[in-house]
Image 1 (cartoon, rainbow, N blue to C red):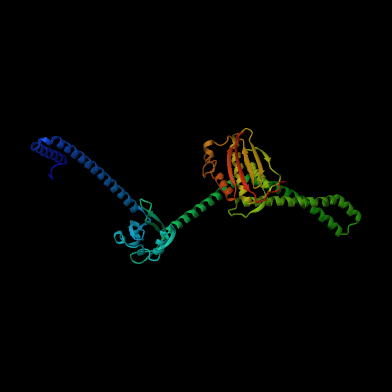
Image 2: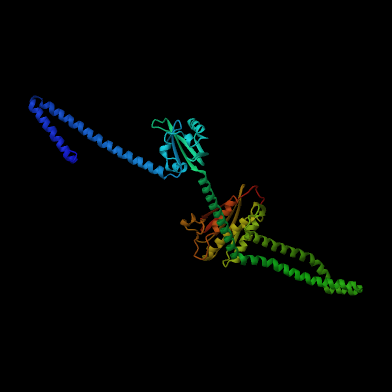
Amino acid sequence: MDGVAPAEKERSRHLIDEAGVAQALALNPVGEEAWIEVIQKMDAVYADLVHHQVELERKNAELEEAQQFIDGVLAAMTDVLIVCDRQGRIERVNAALEQVSGYAQRVLTGTPLAVLFPNHAEAFVDKLAGGTPIADREMTLLDCAGSPVPLSVNCSERLDHKGALAGFVLIGRPVGELRRAYESLNTAHSELRQAQQQLVVSEKMAALGRLVAGVAHELNNPISFVFGNMHALKRYGERLTEYLAAIDSGMSPGDLQGLRRRLKIDRVLADIAPLVEGTLEGAERVSEIVQDLRRFSSTQSEPSEVYDLARVVRTAVSWVIKASRVKPEVLFDMPETLEIAGRKGPAHQIIVNLVQNAVDVMSVCVDPTLWIAVDVLPDSVSIHVRDNGPGIPRDAIARIFEPFYTTKKIGEGTGLGLYVSYGLAEEMGGALMVANHHDGGALFTLRLPLKDKPDAG
């Protein structure tokens, strides 16, 4: 009946069973009830057999699927895999190990681990048997040609269904591949650092372009003062030269006295010292502004120094306000002098960026006002920059320090000022925070660390 369909086979089997039973009942009619019970038992046993056969086929299908899944995972692994028993005999390897070693799995199965790791296998197995896992250990594998292949190895115990030690699982990656990955990572990191530095320089140059007018105004006052004093000193020099020449020519005392009154020599002598001091003061102010400008635009990391934070804040505010068409009222709440230790240039740049942002958002305000406050704590100093602008949208606060993110119109901002400022604050060991003030407007806070509590003037 090999060519008969399963349904036909089943129907034929029942017909044969019924015919046999009928014949038996004809021969022994007295045992009819007994035969009926036998038939019922046979049907029950047969139903159980069918049920178990179906379950067995389902379990076999699940096992085949699980095996295919495991085989697929092992084949896809780029790291080498070796499964050993408790004695260190190889039970299974994956395709990556076959490719690295040149051995086929059928050759390695049942062989000791020493075939692949002759210099490490014994100590390796002893260590694992003692319950000590192996992590990131560099070991040398010998391939089928006897050539060494350095691996970074991790290995741990493999337990059976009862929780007893069944063997070990070893996973390794060629060290050369790791080194290439590290080199690629280092290259990417270097490129990222270089790009960040270029962003910082670009933002500095953009800010410097905006501040040119303010810096020029700052320079104009002391330079004008120096020019005026020098012109006065030149006139006084001419008078003194004329008076000394008269003395050298032997002019009579009476005539010298008249010349002295005419040239106002006494007044000249009284004015020379204040003129020289004022000229020096103006020149020093010019020098300070130039140094601030050089420090602001420099691409070099400056060393830590003691500087007057209050002066830096005032200079940054002055540069921005004098270069802006918006002239807000500026209210300061800070000491006259506040000396701290740190990097002056980055602090100056951050405050310039914060003040510039505040001035920009207040362009729509009728009475723009800028509040600058400084709080001194035992271990830090905080500079608060607040405006009375429209504030920052709730959905923008979380992204305000992201690179290239800006709430300004296209062409009005690069989106780098706050990003660069945030990074500079972290580099100095501080922090830059933002919030909307409860009275309106935005509030930025720059916190800088203090090694020692400064003396506030």
